[in-house]
Length: 143
Image 1 (tube, rainbow, N blue to C red):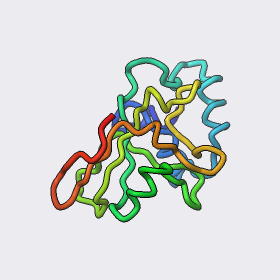
Image 2: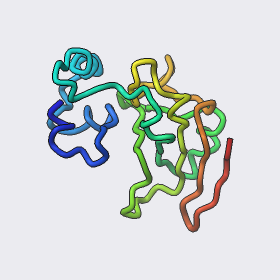
Image 3: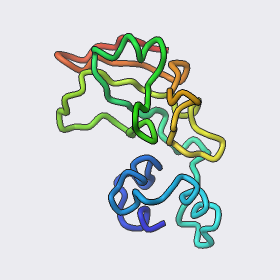
């Protein structure tokens, strides 16, 4: 509950972002779920209503698009697949954005965090759209 009380930018936090933060990296998904369930002051709750974002974004590179399009997004050697609420505005080097349909991908407990399936993949069936970012924006997939 500390993270939400002390100014997380959007009024909510993706669990992956919380667990990746240096202050919280030693905690697990189960720890976060326990806080949500036992929070008597109701400072934290799992998102399970239309107030959660419609989509989340995963940044990648054009060279990976054929594999992502056919097999999905891999967590590779990480614990979770990184999703963000919006594209970063700082001109990062990613040249591809894959938008995830949050309502379709969100877990029953409202967590916007995924380790992927048994193979560590977020399958393409959860993709909402994909967009080339450089040299100019262009949609390459739209469901």
